Amino acid sequence: MRKNGQRGPAVLRVTEEASARSDETIRMIRKGGHPMAIQPKSAAWNAPGTGAAAKPRRSRLAKKLWADRYMYLLALPGMAFILLFDYVPMYGIVLAFQDYNPFAGVLHSDWVGFAHFERLFKHPDFWMVLRNTLVISFLNLALFFPTPIVLALLLNEVRIAFYKKTIQTIIYLPHFVSWVVICSLTVTLMNSEGLITQIVKGLGFEKVQLLLDQRLFWGIITVQSIWKEAGWGTIIFLAALAGINPELYEAARVDGATRWQQIRSITIPALMNTVVVLLLLRIGHIMSLSFDQLYMMGNPMVMQVAEVFDTYVFKAGVLQGNFSFAAAVGLFKSVVGLVMILGSNWLAKKTSDNYLF
Image (tube, rainbow, N blue to C red; front, side, top):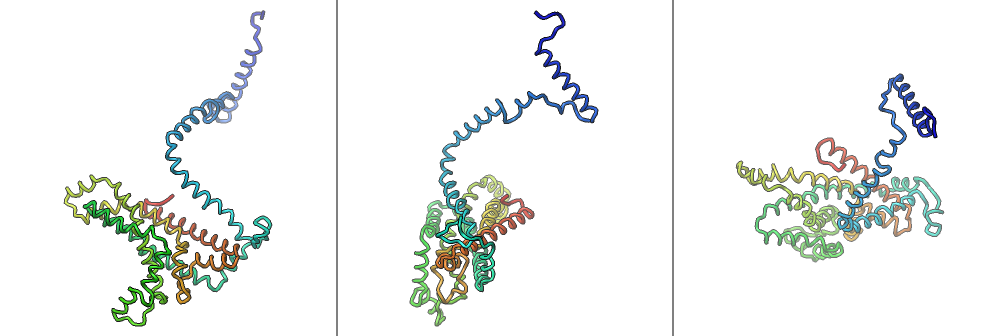
């Protein structure tokens, strides 16, 4: 039995905590603070992400993941491909700074710093390879990149479904043909007895050697790329065109807009976001070209205009066993591509509302 006025231990403890908080509040007010800034120790149990409050959030996340499980399963092969072939090989970057010895391995090979990069920049063929790579890439940007856009705009104007699907099928087919077949077909048509060579001779051009003329090589490569991949590239632009609201065209026709005015005022602006994104991605791969195409189309007579970084790495690095040198060239290409895509994205952000990030 407690006597009147005697307090138990629990009451005394609560009273002491209240008195301590009151004293702390007074000190905060004197220092110019706010009394609500003081939180009791028990408030930590109600903080976001802790205690019982985190359980509903975790359950909501689990429900959301389960609801979209089929979408994640569809994305899983692509994510696994990127992880295995894009991120895991990045471990090989260290070879660019080593004198790699296959028998010693990565961990026991000697470190040489930037010696392989100095060798690359001082090599007499470096500027020739850089020129060829940039020229072919810019020809693809200027001639190949706009071709799918033009094809998509033309196909979008076709109203006969059968005719439209037939054309799409015909221009899509070359994408599924190997570069080996395309290059073999090109050589067959353009050799000294080929059909195209005979047509050119019939037009009055004698002693023509299409495959041995350095002045024609870049044009042949660009035409090959357009014929093979332009039709496949139209898929993305046709998908973007399919997302345009038809009511916009109806309103334009009511206002008396012609077909060209509808394309200029509705279709092209709706495509600009897709065009800019794909263009920025293309610029990021400006140092990477089709190895199969250029390796098979090259010959000693046109090597001064056909040698690019992809073929140069294979010949000077892989075939000769200079794996560290090949890794250094690959890292140089990646750095240049990263700088190009960051710079072009910054420029797009400053000049328009369409950019990647």
